[in-house]
Amino acid sequence: MNKADLVNELTAKLNVPQYKSRQFLAAFEEVLKETLGKEAIRLQGFGCFEPWEQTERAGRNPRTGAPCVIPPRVSVKFKPGKYLLDALNDRKK
Image: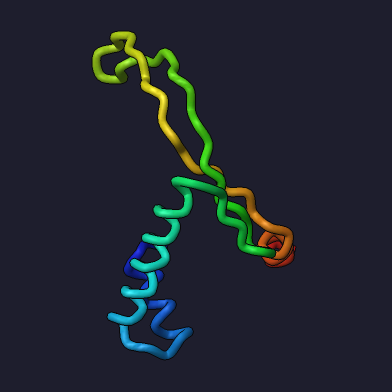
């Protein structure tokens, strides 16, 4: 599913115009960006988005094969919640 598909699903589920779904999704993304810079976001039953610092490490340029240093950066980990995992695993049975 891509962003356009998600907007269409939100439009159908919420029974609102597409531009409202796009506004909602843009606002949600903005809140995630602002908050993850400072702290984790925990959505009870759904999961937890946690920022984590990646350290500087050695890498290799895939095109040339030359060694290089990958600088440190902040990334995000997602840990699914119990209800999300239950829903996903029940579907497979």
